[in-house]
Each structure stands twice: as structure tokens, then as C-alpha cells.
Length: 360
Figure (cartoon, one colour):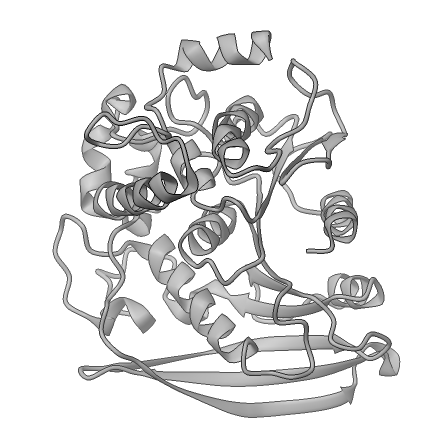
């Protein structure tokens, strides 16, 4: 990959396979150590730390509909109550399970709406997949609320490395996964987390830290998601520091506005945390704000971690992808949909094709 390697060199990225003491990572044991270092760097300087205290989960069934989508799926609505030694929070999720498949694999889908859109839910369940829909604002509000709604008020905060909204939404998804793993009517070894835009950032962070997910899918996630910061066009850290998104990440992160080259990481570090599990990144050719080239190069930059562990990462020609081109052969999958910032049928169909191909 001469051309793509040259493109990465221009970005001057921090090395993902170099320990803090300067030792080169050469085997899986060293990678586990490096993985811990990367997770620590990212929590301290990017997303913030989630609370570490013991939790109690109480799940209550609200709706039980055995005739979803014309009788083809069983639909459940749950309320999840989470208690800590100091506080509690609650939020709901909806689960649709196809009837024609025994123990189907699952999409844990971060959603901008509380319900599963009928067309999306029916299409996914018809393809033999269950979908657990998590409405992100049920976990905590997507606004400058001084962290006083939902799970945001779950623990004391500081202005430096306490969890931001993306980490809170990610934490909520992991609590839904806690519940899914107790079920006997799904394939607990094939649960993928997926999201679009800011929820693509969320899905990526959730799956990067929570190794129980078999696959992580990020659609048009841009800055703070799959896209590299160094050399990025469109949205940058100074834009993420605006009032509407200021609380998405921890306070330490915003010191790097207009200083991206000083970051002690870049987003290929986040992607690398998924290894050796399957990762899928979706981009859109006209999504200039997200910058598809930087999303694609991030996949290239994370691939050496997969190769170190004995797998192929992103398998692609030595050049940027064309519109509607898909790369499905490696542990890192990618496609570039023609169009703008959106997650639609083309994206879901390619993702399902990839999952079917890799049985993940």
C-alpha cells in the first residue's frame, strides 16, 4: 500500500503499536498492555471516565407483543432501572426478535427516536436479525443541561476527565447488553452495536471499550468518531467545542482545539481497541463535514493491529474508494455510499451482507 501509506505519513499520526516506554509492540501479550495504555489515554484526554462502582440492574417488561410486523416478529418494550450506592437512573429499550430464526444475531441500535421505525425493524427482522433499539436521550439529554438529566447525574463530576455525553450514552448501551446476555432466545455471541453520526461516535466508543460486542459499526461518525483529526477537513475539535456539542466529551479534550497535532492519540487508536473483533465503518461521498477520506484512512491506520494479531484488517486496493465501493474481505469492513450525511437502506444492506459473510 505505497500510496495509502504515503497518505498516512502526511498525517503524522502517533504510533498505535508503540508502548509509552518506547518499546515496539510485537506480540499479543504486548498488545494487551498497549491496549490498556490506549484505553487510559482516551478516557483521560477524550471521552472521560465512567463511574466504577457496583451497579444493580432491574429490568421490567412493559409491552409484550407477539404479533409484530404482521405476526413475523415478537416485540418487547423494557424499562431498565439502574441503582448505584449513591443514586439511580432508568431508561427504556425496545427489542424485536424474528420468529423464523432460532436464536438470531442482534443489532444493538443507538437511535434518534424512542421507537423502532416499522420499515427498518421489519426489514432487519426479515433478514434474520433481532434489533434492540436504544433511544439515546432516554439515557441522558442531548443538550447543555449541566449534566443534570438521566445518567449524567449518576456520580460526581470534575471539569477535566469525567465522562462526557458520548461516554454516558455508551455506558447505557452496555447496560442494555447486560440484559441481552441473560436471554436464551438470541445468539449472545453475535451482538453488534451500531449508530449514525453522533451515535456513530457513541457506538464506536461503546464497542471499543466493551469487548463483549462481537462487532462494532459506525456510520458517518466523523470528528470524534472514525475520522482522523490530523489533516481532517470539515468538523474539527473547535466545532465540537460549540455549546450544542460541548458536553459530548470530557473537558481535557477541548484544550486541543486548533491544536490537533498535539493530541496524544488519534481516532485510529479508538478503532484499534476493537481488534481483533469485526469493525465496520460507513462513509458518504458528499459528507464533507464528517470527511470520508479521514474515516477511510483511520481504518487503514488501525489495520496493523489486526495484522499483528494474525488477521487481515482493511483489505482494499492501494487508493481511495469510489462511490458505492465496498470492502468486505477483512476484519475491518468499509463502504463509501454515494450521497450525503444519512443512514439508509444501502448502508443497512451492506452491513448485513458483511455480517452474513463473516458470521458475526
